[in-house]
Length: 458
Ligand code: UGA
Image 1 (tube, rainbow, N blue to C red):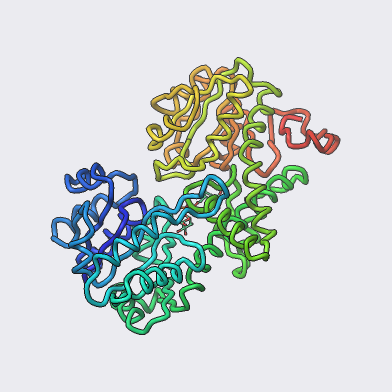
Image 2: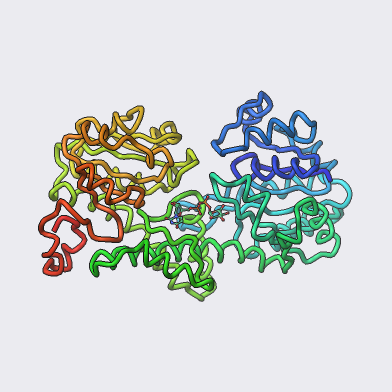
């Protein structure tokens, strides 16, 4: 099958490379000359474990190539995937579809013979209809079908997610394109991973509904974490006990500093806006968005509380900046709001991330960039762990403590083992459970007025 992928960003590059690995001839197209030249020279512009090798192997096998021009590749293609960006529009939070429609017009102009146009970008319900309308009105002589095939890849695990998806959703209202999509994916073991066919609008909504549900699940456990701290329960054990019920499942129940990334914040907002436009407001998702937004700064205040209520003039170390581990992506990362809160409070903030330092420089303010966790610990009044990179799970704890001025660690991902930390003399502030030691006033917990109750030191 000859496939063209329009947009060589995260989704396009991963999907294009993985489709080539299934045996198809794939051309990834992008308007950025620099990006295409880098890819042609074997440089992969994004951080994704395993991707470089998939790209190298398939380029070497002659199945994968890169081009700045779509006309030739599209003319020869059976299927053209649209994987361009759909950022939130600054004015109103709706998804900005200008790139999608521009790509659709260029594809239609170049297409010859029967061509299936597949939207891979996350697009609001009805976008496929609008693309079809453009084709019908502006290119009536062309034989083009429009299909929705949303992606469910997670950054950091995208290659394995592509190879072993829970499902592949295909929204198609046309028999020929349904068959073509079946042919594209047939190299995957479809007995194990069902190809789920539905109408195009339904497929578009499945993507938003899935992301919104997951975002809501995370927000649910984050609120439960706050309640656990008040009640003297342990959120990790609550999550485990809940997750044993297969109707609930144990995934996406890790309490943390709030969800970030390029998908959940943007997609929840876009879904909220769509629902409002149709006069069917989604109150649960509206609340999810608001809670998550507040939570990020609240995590900054949590660090301030752990420093006796003030970080003015204090050195605070931050471990992990990216929105989650195994990515260099800083988009909507909770670390940004947390660090801003600390800087507003007058802290001297020292940061380290295994992969996100370059991206962080573009979005963080006046912080100091250090080369590893131990440099971050040097002279620190407190450390806050924001992103759960594996390397932070195996730190030399005695060394870390010796370097710190005061051994306060605020763990926003519950990475550290409490007994071990306490054994090494740290004052650990975990998330979703009461700190166990070094805070003699713990027994006063219930006497704390509600407005101060989040303060783990009271
Ligand atoms: C998410 C979805 O998981 C993918 O299925 C989807 O394809 C993708 O969005 C997309 O729409 O393109 P991604 O943004 O890469 O993938 O990251 P996730 O692993 O879902 O994590 C999102 C955020 O939730 C992170 O900030 C993470 O730290 C947070 N999270 C996740 C939690 O706080 N707790 C959890 O239990 C799980």
